[in-house]
Image (cartoon, rainbow, N blue to C red; front, side, top):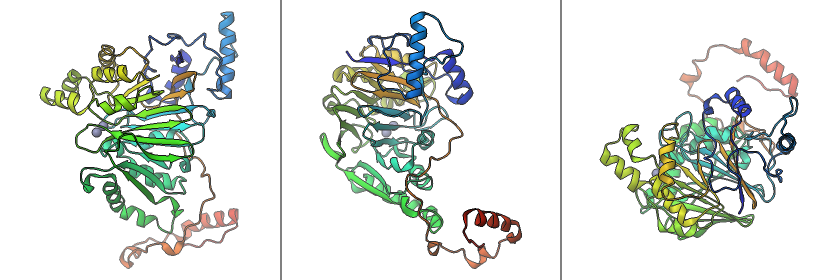
Length: 446
Ligand SMILES: [Zn+2]
Ligand SMILES: [Zn+2]
């Protein structure tokens, strides 16, 4: 059986997390897997066979040496059991999944709404859903925006696409020098489809986009919308560079929502959008290396903490969404190497109830996800850790040379508004002199 390796937060890690990223302090790592062959403490693991970066591998070796002698060194690092963005290469036969949103429509500091970044060893990266608040999580990963140009939407609830505008505009400003490509389902009517939604989203951004003309590299401010049939049964909607992505329907709110299957290099990854448990997921997600499926807050907690009426909690928590015990039943059918549950507020006083209910119907490998949970997947192992992020992150450098904007594209102010400028020429001239001299240019004030 493939090994499951899950990092338990050591005192060192907890201390680092506390210092670097206070807001995720207190998150547990993935729930301990009773059927995994190496449960409990993260010692006695094999060497990292290319899973971690050099630093991680060296630290692991140091750790194993220490553990084998039963001693710890006061000067050698022990194993690093968190993921630090931009510090680890991805192996050619490896996938990495990072949870960038695992919560509810009401995004909160600890949990943005649904968003998942899948990175493949061939260099491809795919974003599944971009729910409210998740663009910030994407930014924390320090990935050049040119590599973040493919987004797949499971459906058009804001908790699954509410930050698309942020990725679209913010990503272009931060170095995406190409179109943002978006795939999403049709609806029962054209007005309920992805094409309609995103055409109107772009119209809503008219003022924003017009105001940037002539000021910034223009190439990123375009969207390529690929609408596919929501009724497609495991039909191919994307096929490039050895990666095939298929979709099949979900049952949620109205006709239209879907789930996705990604196949690459012998791996199968499944991202389930919101749904009542459905037969297509049971069929097409079977045997996945990693299967994400929604798992809603328990009905009692919806009433107690979310203040739903009992009737509303039952309807939403079991009929529009998948209740934890139903999530477990689905996973018992498909038997993934790793099941990933999301779409609940994961707190100290909600997690046990969700876990207990899942365990009434499923006893396989399980991650109860939280934002910044990371899975490294190879044929031999699934390693689960938490990312520790730098809150002072800046956009990474663009991968292509920036294109100078065409200043003639600027849309001028009216005479009335332009005439309201205070005279700042003397104040600003030193900055012009400084930059002109430093870069050998000859810019003049307007
Ligand atoms: Zn939904
Ligand atoms: Zn949702």
